[in-house]
Length: 160
Image 1 (cartoon, rainbow, N blue to C red):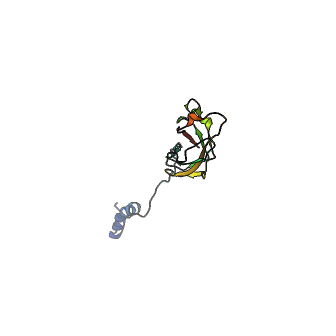
Image 2 (image 1 turned 120 degrees about the vertical axis):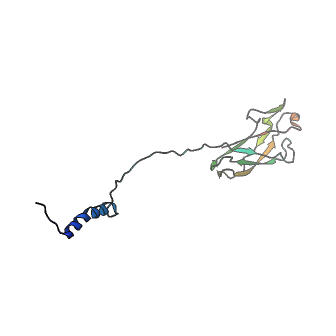
Image 3 (image 1 turned 180 degrees about the vertical axis):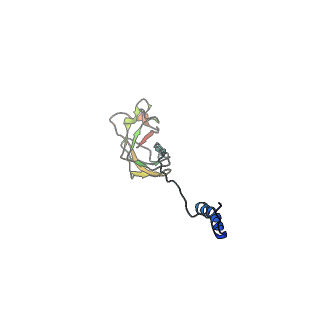
C-alpha cells in the first residue's frame, strides 16, 4: 500500500537536496589544508679590488744632494663598488713593477730618501679616493752623485 503524503511534505522533501547543496557549495562552509615548507637560495659576494695610486709629475725644486725636499701629491682610489679600508701606503724609489731601480751606473734608489706619507687612513667608498703627500729628498752621500743629475726617480706606491 502506497504511503500518501501531503502536498507540504512532498514540497519539503524536494527542497532538502537544494538546501544541502546550498550549504555545501553556497559559501557557508569551506575546507582547506595548510602547509609549510623550506627552501634554499644564495647571495653572491664579490671580491676586493686593488687600490690604484696616481701621482702627478714631481714639482720643483729639483732634488740635489742634501738639498730641499720635494713634496709629492698622490691619490689612492678604490675602483670597486664596495667600501674598502686603506691601512697603509708604502712608497719607494723603484721600477713600475717594484723591482730595484737604477737609472745609470752610479745612480740608484740608495741616492734618495722617502718620508712618511701624510694621509688619513680609513674607509674608502666604492669609486671614491683619498689624497695624501710624501716628501722625497736626495741623500748627501760621501760618493760622487753626478750620475743622478737630470734623472727622474720613479716612485713606486703600494696601498693596502
